[in-house]
Image (cartoon, rainbow, N blue to C red; front, side):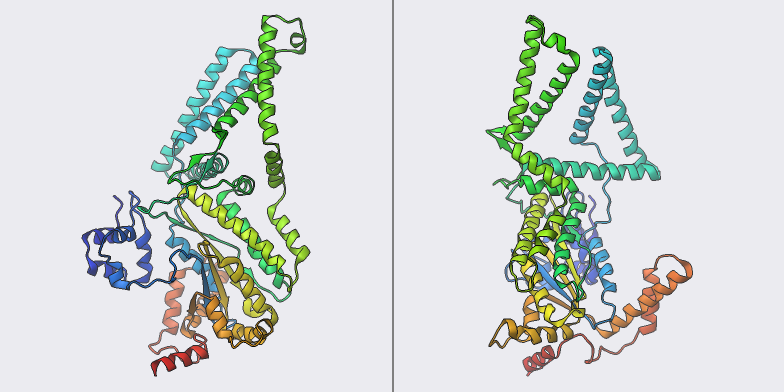
Length: 528
């Protein structure tokens, strides 16, 4: 069945074994690892009337509203302590948690057979038009279909039973292209479901944007870079044509648990597309098979039938194109021009620190991205979380810190938005910058910089000084290793070495970067 030890312990309702397995925080990813039937230990426990996880961890929730999915995570450490070095490590850990290292392999499906059939008919039709031999063209069509099936079957067989590099790469390429094509067809011809089933949990997938390094000179363009990098990451994940065609077609969800075909006058769009393709093929075939002399000759039985078929197909093609001419022109414009360039042009024309219309224009783009990701997730059957990493906020000018924090909070703080924003900052520097500028925005207010940052950041992580020394040791060891051997950094070896160097039994000192003074005072007051 593909069960893990946690699956078996959950079914046996053994609290002791579950607690032992989850004692190591790294094993928490086993809670969401599905078996062959798609069951996860978390689902098994949640479907039982008496939950084991609530007994172990309690019934605590990160959000008061469970429908609110967005998170703003603060990675707090001293300026220049090497916290940026941990961001790549964080990305690798999150991908490992979501099992994104598993690469798709090519398999036969109905879509594969349909593509092979269309390709065979197209090659056979071209052969018939060139040779004027219908029987030979039928043989060519059947031969292309059979040879394609044999070739793809051999790719699947060799990939499963032999270690052939180019076969593996071909299988991976075909699987990725097939998934992109399937998603593209969903966007063109289908409407996503609006009601999700509660009996199963969709797998989680993380999309990471480029690490945004905020600078003093490009404070306003840094916000623009976050949104454009988000667009680039989505186009890379779902495909260029899929993401751009969604902006034109925008399929609306239907009140159903399954997707449905989009219709025009109760006729599915894919049937209209098939009729249009057949009409174009018929027009081209008739034009190639019949010359102009026969077309304009005296009417007889042959020319009458030919003219009737030709005019009918021409009218059908013209009617379909005329009814969708505006959509076709928008599709051509979207595919030709880059959407990121249009966003940058419209933003920079109105960019001003005191102008709120630039943030509102980016907010519309972010809302479109959220709708697109939720629509594609409904088609594919997965949960996508977009990770936005903002680094270097403590290095820019103090009067720009509050503007950037407010912009990030405005763009990515909507309820149910699938964003996780990571702020890698020094809290002391940022709090001082906020306090020096917050009274300009909020006059006669007693809001401190710490309170403002606490309300913006949902989940703060404080890096202790011992952890920072370990990071620095790992950085130095990685540089030395690369200089000597030119190979990659061995994580396990260097972690063991740095742990041996800096291992100590003493606790972190109170002078560490970790906790602000305001938090320490509050903690002491609560203890009293």
